[in-house]
Image (cartoon, rainbow over all chains, first blue to last red; front, side):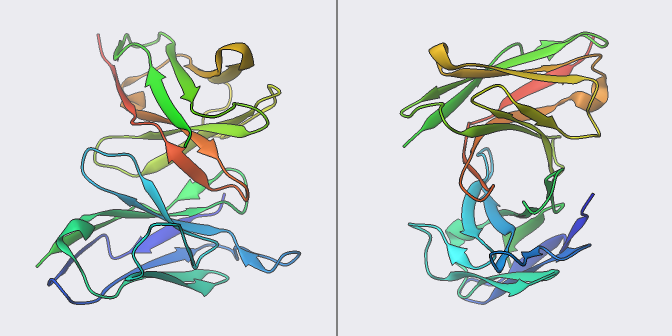
Amino acid sequence: DIVVTQSPDSLAVSLGERATINCKSSQSLLYNSDNKDYLAWYQQKPGQPPKLLISWASARESGVPDRFSGSGSGTDFTLTISSLQAEDVAVYHCLQHYSIPRTFGQGTRLEIK
Amino acid sequence: QVQLRESGPGLVQPSETLSLTCTVSGGSISPYYWTWIRQIPGKGLEWIGYIYYSGATDYNPSLRGRVTMSVDTSKSQFSLKLASVTAADTAVYYCVKVVTGGMFDPWGQGTLVTVSS
């Protein structure tokens, strides 16, 4: 199984500041045949199901504010929130959909400092 | 936009079988993949398995042997059965659509299933 490890487990950032969450995979998620990284980011607010934010490591879903960005390739990925807003308080998860079984990172809890 | 809704008992006895159904509305169950994911309270997300509209399945090896998924296209529903449950199976269970490329979106609201006597 591919192990996906997020860091940090929790993070407190001041409003308007940058938040950075990392996701590391135990093997490359880059599929050579299509040159895509099979890594997605989700946001889960309290009492809600996860919501897809970023697909293919860096493609923002429709309606997602442009302060959210994804980067990285291979085994190391980053989710960045450029200017934290109050509504961004949530748990963020990364998902590898490169191989079966699909696996998630353990989640990163983002709070306001 | 397709919507998913989980239904089933919120309390299951240890050693019994957990049974959940997901009803899909606002879109067709064909020709897509669908999946079940669970989240132990306060913990991360665990993928349980896939079912294709045709009935083909693929399960997480960690649960294989206890999981059975089925689909009823006439009712726009797919189902999960998890046998021989223990307290460790207490979780919020989500049904989710699988989109092109394998991402999971959208998700149902989830249903909490507690395993307890």
